[in-house]
Image (cartoon, rainbow, N blue to C red; front, side, top):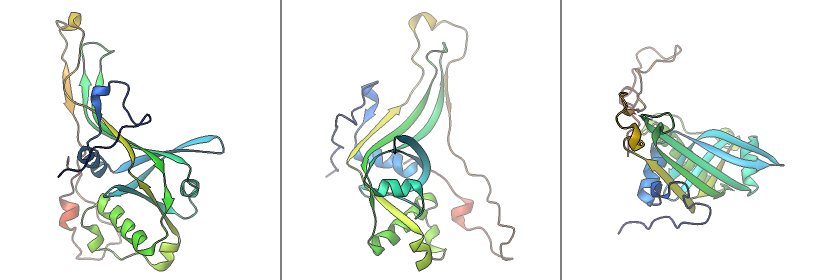
Length: 221
């Protein structure tokens, strides 16, 4: 049995072009899992902030991490409202008019309140998940965080309760009177492509790049 869709709320219902709204849990998870970076929006003392950071999803939870001295993490740990967004650009849409140019994209908005992770096992698992989110398989090769590093790091958990996605696909939508214009129209597909890995100059002689580096790919899920 498939998981239920996210419940639409007054805050998450897509109002502009509602036909592009997506609430399917699997589709939302696929976008989150493909994205490398999220943007965290919050306000503190009347000042708005939007901070880019890496993250990880584990089931119905997002994990954020950073320095224990981070202003963002300190603020979010107080239980203030937060908005987390991710965006994947799949193509540039070239129309016959400047007005109708667009992009094909997949985006997610998460609303809620985060909490500080204090359970040591959950904290360690979340940090492993962040590494695996960025480079799957990497946690098997690297040293685990030391106790001092764990003390210097904060991890926040944001439960995925109020969530929606918005997706655009397909060709441009032009006005009928522009269809005969003699200019090209269509889509320029885009995707993230990894280049050949570049070794650390201080790398020990004889250590070759692993397959996860040689074959790195952010695959559409």
